[in-house]
Image (tube, rainbow, N blue to C red):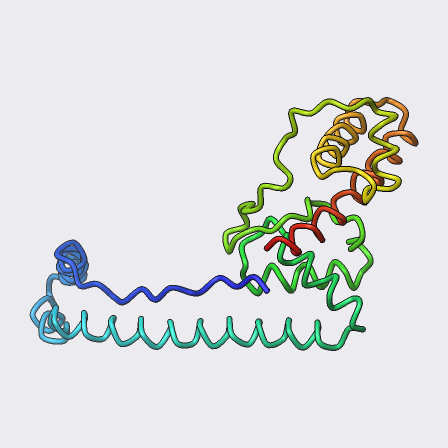
Length: 210
């Protein structure tokens, strides 16, 4: 399954942060000039403030990483609870989803699926693999220079295994184009279904060649 690592960002002590701290403390003293000396005595040193911020930053990062890990565990629990064929379909869809490989997005996909808003046989995105950021990494779905008629495209989609891979690519792109331009909604929907079926088959071929 796609997984995006959570990078660590250590706290940085910079001259700009120290200058901002000095400005903040000065404004606190100027706000109550009669008590400026007492306020100054209570104000921590720059080094103390920076050390406290570094500790707080580290503790917050630990909490954030634990919360993110728990989301991953929750998503995996939900997937493991599905029947085997649905588990495979969900994992396949997630590996092709155009979203960052973050658990919050995976949980959103799972929720949409549980509510019936995503059809795993015809998801709202191409079934070609994406990287951790959601960018396409496969080249099986690149635009084809091969031309086929719409009738030929439908014939190929009906029985893709009888046709060369290049023809399947061309048929997919032609069906997608026809669906986007056809004013007949029923025919456009039929073309999209055929294109989705080709996506599924091309995705299987991509796995076979991976």
